[in-house]
Length: 103
Image (cartoon, rainbow, N blue to C red; front, side, top):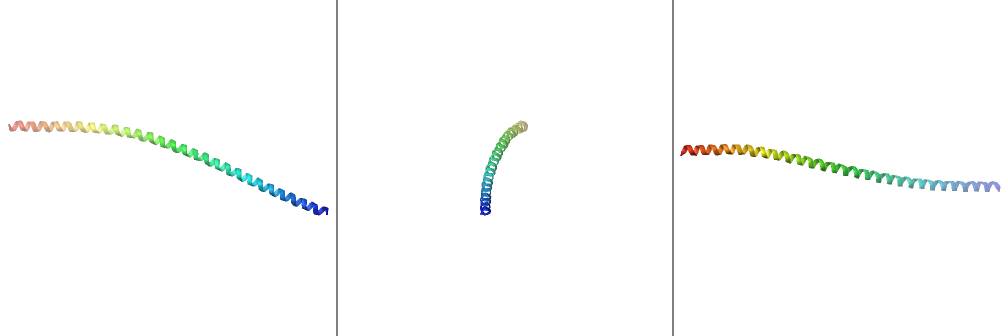
């Protein structure tokens, strides 16, 4: 009888041990899930920060390039106007000279 009681006690202890192990495993799994979710959230925040920085840098570089190109464009426009003005003056002088020669 004592042996049966010891066996039942051992079975109960084994069941308790298995139940505790299940609970601990569930708690560990939940903790791991929480940590994974937290790491994922932190990674997403870092990703968003990096993207925002890259966009800001790209905007600044784009603005600087636009200003540079606009300046170059103005220089080209000035050079073309000067060149055209000289050519127009030569044409006017030629026309005036020919008109004077005809008169």
